[in-house]
Length: 140
Image 1 (cartoon, one colour):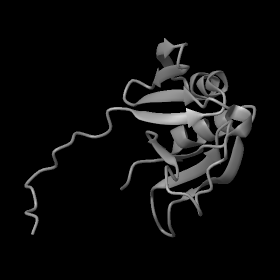
Image 2 (image 1 turned 90 degrees about the vertical axis):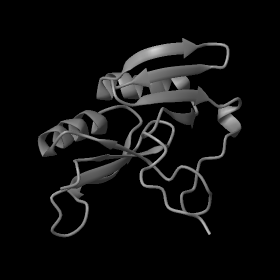
Image 3 (image 1 turned 180 degrees about the vertical axis):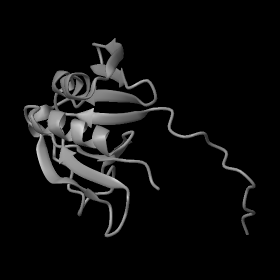
């Protein structure tokens, strides 16, 4: 039998690694659409590290982009989506406007309450290359 701990042993995500089709295209999405900064690069891998000052993302380019299999969230085990928090509904609307006009982005649904009657709003899109990203206001 496992004994429950009084407090978690972890402190949140250190970083999140995403395998992408095109590392420059993914970098441009985070930098141009969302204002992230490039924290580091590793051209020999190739990898680019981007951050919003809170979350560090490692963007790793797959070895064979043309032969890479797109993730199917209903059939594969893996990252279903990455959810990023925004400050409030106004910020969510700004992010939505920037993201929907970025080349290669597919909007899954427009900003809406996370469930009926909720004050938390969100939307999901697929960034260039197909990784699903959710943007959400804080839970209230």
